[in-house]
Amino acid sequence: MLTIAYIGNGKSTNRYHLPFATKLSDKIHVKTIYSRVIRDTWAKLPGTTYTTDINDIYDDPAIQLVVVTTPNHLHFETAKDALLHGKNVLLEKPFTETYAQAQELFDLAAEKGLLIQCYQNRRYDSDFLTVQKVIESGVLGDLLEVEMHYDYYRPEIPENTQEFSLNSSYLYGHACHTIDQVLSYFGEPETYHSEVRQLLGPNRMNDYFDLDFFYGPLKVSIKSSYFRIKERPSFVVYGKKGMFVKQTKDRQEEHLKMFYMPDHADFGIDLPEHYGCLTYYDDEGIYHEEKVVSEVGDYSRVYAGLYEAIINGKPKTVKDEETLVQMKILEDSIQAIYPR
Image (cartoon, rainbow, N blue to C red; front, side):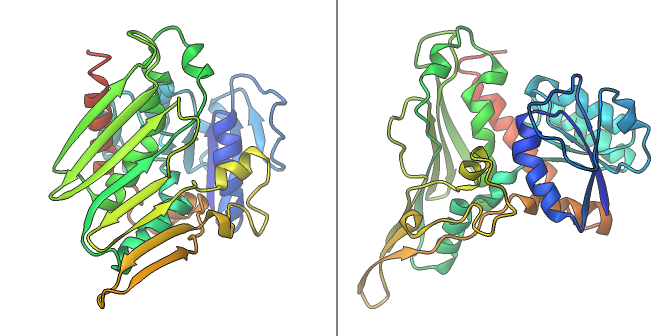
């Protein structure tokens, strides 16, 4: 068993981590959850110790992995403290505020013979996995362009935020999902271009970003906004012979918000109305238009990978270099509105 503890007991821990860690009950044991104040906001996990003393984690030799889900600005210092206490670390995204902080954590982990990894659960989104399946089928021919959209219509969030903050920025809070998807599948880009905006004016919240990544003739774009009353397709993929459109996002988050958990067989599963549309000409010039059954997304694959890495010595699923490239992109891209 991999015995783990959490530093933080808010939405991140209870919505995006515990349902997937506990799904692997044959591999994962959640022993302790630390928070400065223990509230009744979330139901307690049976058999787990809840504590306000961080030393209940640090002084427990049975705990092999600490999962850090604190607010973003505390990621670096909390993860560093856990490493200094001899614990492997899974750190929520955005990993840190700067490239230098990320490098320091990786160096410290290497020095101590420990693992530290970013929690990149969106690698296991259904829509992203389905796009990979379509690309790898080869029916689109040579890839020309991939558009990825992560849209909301939540104008109240930027409208009620009067000053810019790095840690509440849309770029740091949401691009960390989609940039990782790009890097994990396409690799480090040859070049990239960033447009990061404050639609409500200078020194207001960063509420929009548009990032373009270039791989020879292929361009991969990430576009996101808080002011999209109708969401753009989650993915649009163009090749020389066709295109694929996946309109809707992975449904795991949708179900989690409804407290419909992974113990249901249909958790996160797309219905036929959610399937993407594939349009292409085959090698004989015959036109095809068809629905593509969605792949099954599963965030528990993050924890399965950690089990293999810590218990069985397998390579980490999220490479240090991928996290460092992401931090460089985030840090470079925010400079237009937050020069330092």
